[in-house]
Image 1: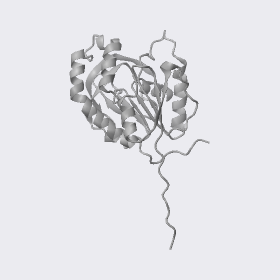
Image 2 (image 1 turned 180 degrees about the vertical axis):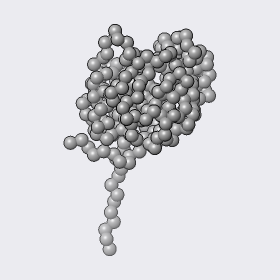
Image 3 (image 1 turned 60 degrees about the vertical axis):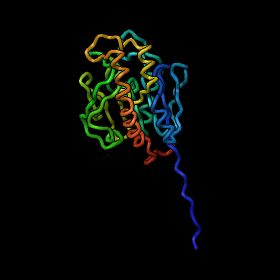
Length: 251
């Protein structure tokens, strides 16, 4: 009688996250990752954490931040170039990358595209619509949904990227490179605390613009749209953080 064999337990998907400032943490992404059993290490640029040249993580995530990458008179922090280098290493290693808001802009830069000033700020709850087809994790998102926006800059598409989403204010709301690399301009990771902090510290919400909602509209919209946005985030991350086809450990 043959000996019984024990299946090797699956290793959880490991996440390395980059948080650019105190006001813009991973938010609901960290909550959902924990629920999915995926450990997350967070590097804090506002606290001086160093970005490594390589990592044994399976997924790199990069979140929003308060600096503008388009101001010619602004000296970019050193982490901007270092983060781009790590993003390229993840892409070239076949690992997964997710950039949200400023993280999507840095991702676009790392892949050779430009970040530029949008035609106007976009703040509050605005619809995004699908403009490109995708077979990866973004395919679980609906063709149109309302998401939280908080930005005045935008990105061009990297060479070879697929444009996924657009809004009335912003032509490029999301892109994919293959099935493993995604950049979203909108804030899928937002929580009630995220919105509270943004309203308190960000001057963008007081900018005169057709696409900037009032504090009351943003607060009331959160009660309506946050639960649905959270549900779509869960669906997306369940696919994106799947342990299928993990790359081998770096040599």
